[in-house]
Length: 309
Ligand SMILES: [Cu+2]
Image (tube, rainbow, N blue to C red; front, side, top):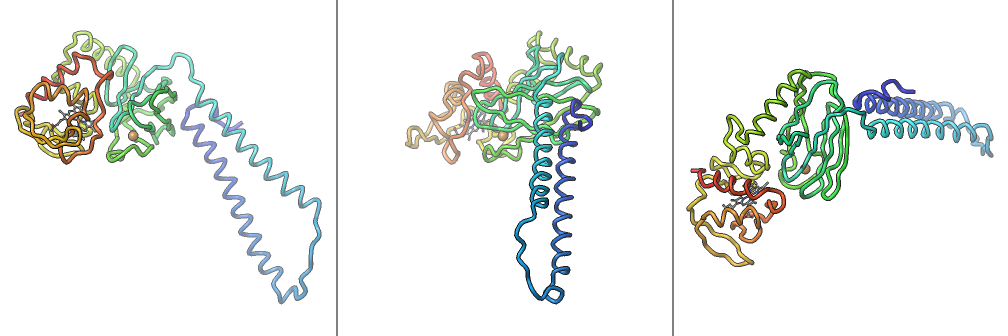
């Protein structure tokens, strides 16, 4: 058995990758060597009269059996490795991941919602993924894990971090214009530090008043609005929300152009039915908050946007 097959996901993937790479390279070297060797050995000058060979039983058995065994062994290690990656150890820390265009949301068992994944070292982490819109893929190269997030279903994944530090998270499934910027981090803390952080955040959550960042701004980040909207005037995929309230804008309503003055109702409608009035010059790609955000969250977001002077 390959070492580490029951251990960490990065070891499992690493070892199987190495195993397959070593076999592939050996075969490449062997075939290339034989090719060159035969070119000289059976050159026309040495073998002026070509000869037909009518079968060699042993040779044929060998070159059927050996590759079959090699390929089966790759399958065996791939299969058991896959199972090890799918079998979540007991006592794992559960985190739900929601992917959407173009950001990640991590939800802990105490209800805490974060846009970066913070985890304790050594502890197995059990991730359950889903998507709000299109297919995304959660990919952490440092841990050798990758799993699709598919709308309408839950997929799962586990891993364990062996070193402290911060690691990159990417989306590995092309999901539209800002796909390449669908980045975030995994922060690995010591167990003690992690639980301190976790409990502090949990307390803030219960007080319903996060310390530091105002609620509206926090929701704006948590719901991934900033993937498409800036609040400082720079245009992104969507219009900037700076100074939007009270402005007169041009929208397309059922294919017809019309002007309107941005009020509270319009802001609310923009969240719940983003495609009813599409801002002229922008694509109709904003995901609806219907069924995703609570009434209170919507109210808070609208209040936040009204104040973006
Ligand atoms: Cu994506």
